[in-house]
Each structure stands twice: as structure tokens, then as C-alpha cells.
Length: 547
Image (cartoon, rainbow, N blue to C red; front, side):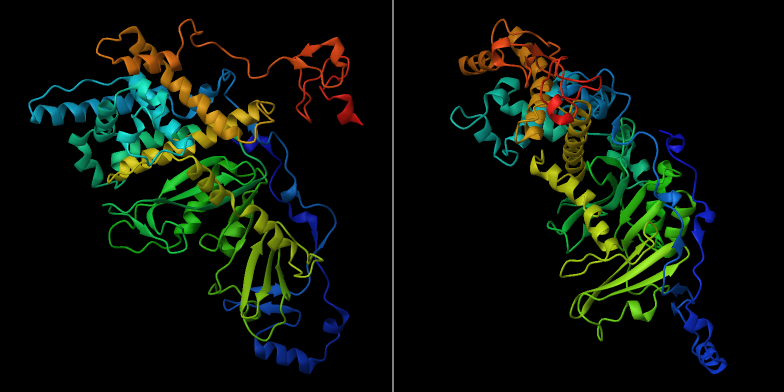
């Protein structure tokens, strides 16, 4: 999607008025000037190891910087006019073409393995694989994804929806032979791409993420570690992550809604050459679709650098993030860990870039760079945190929160194959992204439910599984009485088939007297309660919210 037309032009240099030096510094003696020149540091400036000058005082700003002004639609769902059911939002991301590719590759692998054993493989299809996806989502939101298969199909502890969808043997068989590429051509493709066994399916899913959602003002760039300890040539060890070992993915997400926008899997270095500037390259790749949109990018010290900040600023984006202490543009005053008071802040200003060093602990300081802020504003609380650090803390957790939410109802099952691990993670991310799309399009949907996302995943799973159960009910040959009873329990006779349910129900007006029993589908845009035409304005805001 082209984002250029959504926002204002790039930054103008005319917004800033240079700040004159203090009278003391301007009237300093010739001897003091010579001493400053000999020391290599101009008076009123900090000097970095590479000669970068950072002023003590911020530049005077006559008006709000243009780089902080955003125009155009934000947090909006696009290309989703046909979405009227929960499963439709999920199908925007896990499309039927993607399922067909999985069906084709799974049948190829099943036939190859069964032919070697002299047996006949039963072909799978889109309905069955969709049901398999729905079963995995069901086990995820029921927190039974790691429960043994034998237990899931027992009458005492199992789930009727799972037993009614397919047999335990078929479920095991599909997971064993589930493939995402043609194995006969994999060797040639792996020589150029280590991610080849899952690349085609991943790219089809990945291309759908940014197609249906316009993010808000703040974006977060960070890493996700998909836990895995099996055989994989690009497995990573990250001691600060809860799972330690796994496959590393770089993400850019919306900082407020945690909607995933773009991802780059890390497959290790290419050849024997050491990769230099990887964080900068990844950030520029992520940010390219949002150039000239005046959005802000928040990242940690793996990605942030002064050259990156200036390059993003020249393309209409601001950057806020922590900086590693070994960066040569940092003055020694900003990296000193001793000799400073607790909760002390040191600021430096270079053109439109601001750095602040905050003494958070006795022997620890944090340095943050920002092209969004140009002042010395500090919080008035006991810790006296700078406004830059407060903003960074508020927006830094986008990817971590997305990862946490995806793991809450994860579809992951025990496996030794990393492509299957990536498939489980893809379903988790798709479930979260589809929920954000659905919630944005229908904000009044089950607003009183304490766990709307679980209710959404349950509705999606049931719609994915229903065609498979209907097919088994139409041909009950070989099904036991218990399975037929489960099918009748899940899909009663005479139940409406694939009805288009309106996500907004008719309810009584929240203001009218209950004796009138006046029901309506109109919903207040602020409190999401049903309100009649008499007690609402043209923009559908109830009288209580107006007051």
C-alpha cells in the first residue's frame, strides 16, 4: 500500500530559529577561547569521540515542528468491506490460496511416504486442512495445546468439537505429513535461502498483513524469539528472552493496537562475511512504506544510530530509542556511570536531534536519542524522568506485547520440525491480527465481554470446523455412536447452515423508559450502548455522552 498521500510534506528547515549563545560565553576572554580550542571542545557544547557537537541548550522553536503533525486516516481497516463474520477477518490473512498450497504439498509428501511403504495415501483437501487449523485454534484458546492426543479424544476429558471434526489417527497423520513446499526441489532452493521450506507460505501470509490495516502514529521495531530447540541451522540463543533458544524474527508493529505489519526472519549470516549495520538495514526496510507519513519509530539499541535517525528524519519519520554506550557520537559526559547524582539528566542537542543521559541507578545510566523531542522537559515525580524516556517506555513494548498476546492462546504443539513451529506461530499472529481488524471494524462487538479475543478465536474455530463436521454427518458410515452423538451435540439437526449473523444486535435504547421497549441497532460511537434516533445526534452520540 502506498502511504505517501496520507500525510504532510517532509520536514522544513524554516521551523527552527538558531539559539544564540549565552552572554557569558559570547563575552569570554581570548585566553579561555584558546583553552577551549586546545581541549577540542567548544564552550557551550559537548563533543563526541568522532567530533559530533551537542549543544547544552535546545534550539528555539517558533511553532510545532512539521515532523510531529500527522494527517490522513489512522488505525483504519481497509479492503475489508465483505467482512461480516469473524472468520472472514481471519480469511483475509490465512487465505484459501495459502491453504491450497499446504494441501498440495501435504498430498505430495503423503503419497511419497506411503508409496515407499506400499500403502495408499488418502488425499486431504481444503475443508480438512481448514478444520485442522480450527482444531489447533480451539486447543489454543482452551489452553489444551500441549495435552496428549489420547486424552483429547477420550469421552471424559476430551472436547466434543474436536472428536466430531476428525479421528485421532487422522489428526496425527495430518500433523506428521503437513508440508509447506515441494521436497523434491528443496535442496536447490536451500542453497540460496535457508528459510526455503517455509518461505512460499510465509510470504503469502506476510503480504496480507499490511494490506488490510493502516497503523497509528507510533510504530515499534523489535525482535521476537519463536521457541525451538530442535535441529535448525539458524537457531539463536538470546539469554534475555524467556525461552532462550529459538528462531529470531524482526517485526514492526503498531505500538497501540499491537497489529503486526511486517516481519523479516533472521537466518544467520550469508557466507563467511560478518554482517555490518544489520539493525539499520532492517529498520530502513521496515520503514520504507511509511516514508513521508510523519510517524514515529521506537526501537532499542540494536537498531538506533545517529546516521539512521538523520536518514529517517530526511524521509519524514522521527526516531526514539536507546543508544549503546560505545557509539562514537556520544560524549563521555553521557556515558559516565559515576560522579553523578541519582536521577540526574544530561541533555544534548544537535540540529533536530536530542540525546539525554539519565542516571537511573547508582552505577547505571540510560542514554536515549530522539528526533521527535527538542526540549529539556522532565517529569515532576520523585524519579524526575525526562519526557523522552517516558515516551520511550510507553511505546517500546509493541513487539513484546504482540508476542505475549500470541502466546496466551498459542496453537503450538510439540514437534521436532522448525517449519511446523513457524506454522504454529503464523496461526498465532494471524489470530491476533484478525482480531484487531474485527475489533476495529466492529468496536461494539461483545464490548461487555471480559475476554473478547478468546470469544473471537472460538467463533473463528467453529466456523472453520463446521464444514468438516457437516461432511461427516452427511456420510456417517463407520462412525461410532459416541462420535455421531458428538456431531449431533455440536451441530444439532435443523441448525441454520452458514448464516450471516449481524455482529451488532438489536437491543433496547439505553435512555428510553423500559416500558416503551424501543429496540434499535444504532450504537453510540463513544460508549458503544444501543441508542434510538430520538436520543442520538447525526453522528450517533447518545445524550449522556454529549453531556
